[in-house]
Length: 377
Ligand SMILES: *Cc1c(COP(=O)(O)O)cnc(C)c1O
Image (cartoon, rainbow, N blue to C red; front, side, top):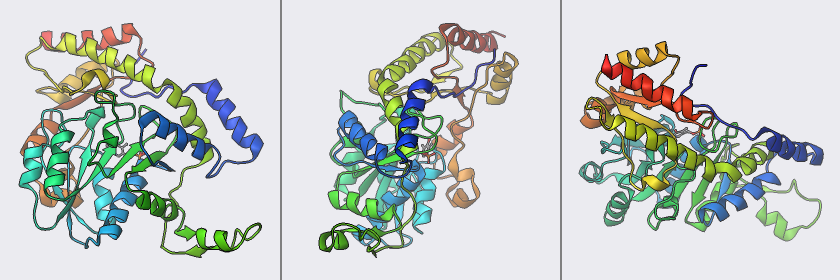
C-alpha cells in the first residue's frame, strides 16, 4: 500500500449525521451551524471574535482590506511577508493593490525578526506572519517589533489549528490584530473549503460580517422595522460573497471534537521521525518551539539532493511533497528575487514527509526505513 503525503481523516458517520440535520432543517447556508461553530471555536481557542468564511484566502483578503480601510493606508503602501508560504498569503496584499516586501525566514521557516526589522520603510504598514507547519516561530519577537514600529500584525494560521504555546493560542496574544485559520480539505481540521477570521477589534469584526456578505447592512432597518421587512436593507460597501455555509460548519463541528487527539498523534509521529533522523548528518530537521503543543500540519526536512531523495522514496511507494517554492520565483513576485537568500536556498532542499491520521506505526516505520536506506546507499 502506498503512503501519501497528506490525507484527511473524516469522522464520516458523525459528519453525515450533522449534515443530515442541516438538510432536514432546510438550512444549508449562512447561520445555524455556522454560528454554532463560531461559538465552539471561540470557546476552544479563547478568541473573542470569530467569523466563519468560505476559506482562509478570503479571510486574509478581508484582513488586509479592513485594516487598510480603518487606517487609511494607500495603494503601494507595504506589507512585510514571507516567501515560504502558499501564495494566498501574499495575494491578499496584491488584492488591495499594496506592495509585498519579503523578509527572510529563520530555522523554523517562519519570519526572521531581524530581517523583518531591516525591511521596514516609511511605507510599511503591517506584517503577515505565517505559522509554518503550525510553528509559532519567533512570533513573540515579531510582535515586539510591530509594537515598536506601530505596525499591524496579521497571523496566517492556516496550519495552526490546535497549536498552543504554554496553553495559550498564539493568535490570541496581545499584539496580534487578526488571525485567519483554514479548514481546507487537507488541513488539520479538514472540511471541504472554509476558514475563520478572528479579530481583536470589535468594529473590524462587525465590518467583516458586512463585507463578507456583499456589504449589506441590515441594522438600520432592523431598528426601524420589525417583522417582515428583511429585504429593506442598505448596502454600505462593495462587499463580497465570502461567508461560510452550514454544511461546512457541520463537518467542522464534528472534526473539532477530534482535533486535539489527532494533533497529539501527529506529535507522536514527529517524535519518531526526529529520533530516527537526528543521527543522519545530511538531514536538517526543521524544529519547532513549543514542540509539545505544535499542530504539526506538515513535517519538513531539508536534504542535499531533493529530487533523488523523493525518487528513492517514490520507488517504495512513499510520496512526499514540497512546501513551499520560494514565492519570489513566481512571476508577480519575481521583483523580490534575491532579497531572501536563506529562504531561497532552503526552499530548494525542502521535502514534506507523509504525516496524517491514516498512518499506522508500520507506515511510520516504512517512511523511516525508506529515508535511512536512501542515506545508507
Ligand atoms: C492552505 C493555506 C492557505 C489558504 O487556505 P484556504 O482555506 O485554502 O484558502 C493560506 N496560507 C497557508 C500558509 C496555507 O497553507
